[in-house]
Image 1 (cartoon, rainbow, N blue to C red):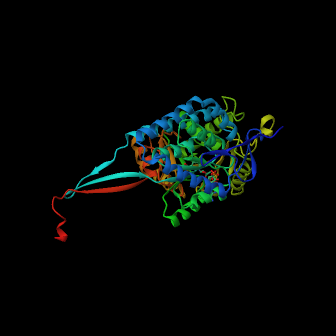
Image 2: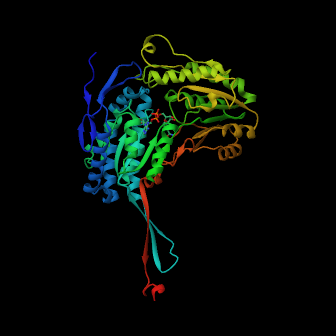
Image 3: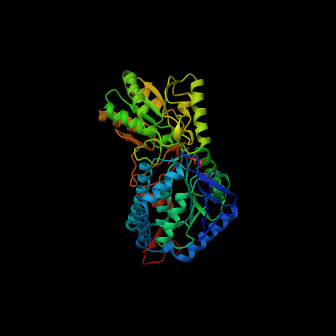
Length: 491
Ligand code: NAD
């Protein structure tokens, strides 16, 4: 098979190859090459950031009226919708997610641009209560050049989540997608060009994180980094940011508890727990990977869960009925296999999965069966370490005190789920569990209008919501003197 043609990157208003090594990205379902590109280099990073700074100053984007910036964002939303099917198919190849899921992610990216456009043009500044003969106001200014660094698991949605508010706030953006999934970020840049975003205001720099992401974060002209990825990388970025006195937002890893109480509607809970852990093949920061189930219903619930997991349609991402596609890379599958082996070495029992499916398409792609393990406690490695794959650990609990103590016994605190018909109990548990998002009788719902982020090792700061734009702005207070006389002190 012939190699794909070299793709251009978007650097300081020019479409051209990067200056680094050529590399190929692969379709995880077959291992075939999808795209070839030259990675960016630190010299490309300098060019992109200096170009972004120049474009930011020359274009007047930061001082444009909010409704003018909003008009461009609305056009981007429209162009994403126009190209929705093409983008969804491209993302399927870029990342191996089932087509039904990539269609939803593309739709959510369009919604994000639309929402941030609306938020941008309706954002109000405050006149704060005066405490003397003066008027006080609080206003927000764009920062200049900001960076967005994204992971491979939900391209286009993660990129839009950073790009739309950063641009709405009046900044220039340097976007660094994951090395293995660069295609949707480059497509977004093409659509931003077409929508009339000033040239040079957005650069997209695929390449190795430890080189390109690091160079972007350290660059003195970069005034903020919005990062989504692993906790170790987030810590590294936070250290650099501390030296630069630069704000960061960090959306990091998770090991989210899902709690099924004795009185839960079991049909709903089974469907919700399966969706929570196995959709996106478990490659999701919010995957509900620790299942706490009331001991009294453990046997029945787990039997139903295992039966449901065995019925999941694992296979061709192009098939609309597919529920689980392959994992992102062979190396990632190997890391999941190591986690499962460690769990078995620790005394865990496999209830289903724990292996690669065999035959046909499965032989070529990086597939792994939905896996359920029990027989370990919450201090085990499988309960404490993020697997980022389709692996669920079952943990029984006795009462609410025991449940909350176990659920909160984790370095992560990103999300949680509660399944019960008892609203008072749900309320108490939802307030007691330490997590940035809690779903009650549902799981993995997302809305751009609702803030998202984690506590502790799951992150710093919040994205989404109207306030999301303000994260990309500096706040400024204005005092207007109203004294008719000179200040009394100097009299
Ligand atoms: P990762 O941390 O390896 O990479 C994320 C991004 O950071 C990539 O673009 C990568 O190239 C870049 N990067 C790597 N090293 C860097 C460095 N030294 N300096 C700057 N940038 C660097 O994570 P991943 O493997 O791509 O993604 C999986 C992780 O992301 C999981 O831990 C998952 O939980 C997390 N995640 C979190 C959220 C959230 O919203 N909380 C969402 C999705 C994924």
